[in-house]
Image (tube, rainbow, N blue to C red; front, side):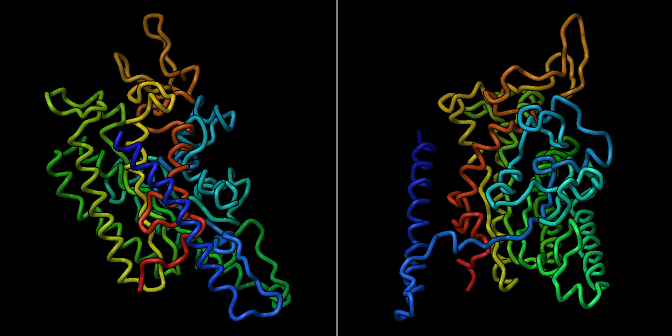
Length: 400
């Protein structure tokens, strides 16, 4: 009930937020009655018109990187929206896809997939790969430092291509096919959704105490990456915190059953508490960035609260038990989604009949339906600090 009240307040705030910007636009647009007297200013005029998105992260926002680098993500992944595997660990779209839609941009092509980049990289690139962590030594070799290095090479090569244009090409502003322009890098939106695997890897191979103690070191590496992006001209950052790891069916299934370990929704409390500590420290770092890095906007997006609210209200939202998942199996026999096997007459690894009724797709990742629900609340800015819609995330509402 408390969460529902909070979200009603957020929705109400969103209306006033847009109204506020409209009024501000009106008050600044008259200027003493110039000819034609622009007495109204469309809210859309406040939009940043980001020409591109550059994304860094893990499987929560991987649109095909790990699939291109190693083994392709198999069906039934992708079946709900794309009708076939799309490199995403989901039955359809991810939050990053809904971000692209909101900004009027095509879905991001994975940097590692040269053949799959049907839309090219004109409007950005996705450096996220499944299993990636902030620090090296986790599940994937493509940790955040590697993703930043890939970005640096990408940007340098584009600058080199444009620097070799003939003078008449520069005058005609002919861009390189399927590539962003050099000026786009300073105007783009930089999205980061990473850190979950640092915690998950720590839970699996160390202790919860050690994992909690490692958070400052994880965020030191994260800070280094942000400063590198800033040095390269990044000025608008949209940063997701980590979700309620303890609510993933995978976490619940394999966590030791002890009295008091689970909350009212069946989530593992110690895991969620560490995720919340990570998020608290992440938010503090972003506050520091605002004073350290001038002329830059940092939007902290509380994905944790949105996802936890969805899990808490699953039944009233029309979903099945949030601890049920649609594809794969962790009970009895362990088979990943798409890894079909028959054991004693039972088929494992296939998908359920109705993914849209599930929050969890495969025990670790969310379904498209859940991602869309989450996106609805984060894209309007009501769950962000500062509370600004993603389309206006270039506006500096916090920095002096």
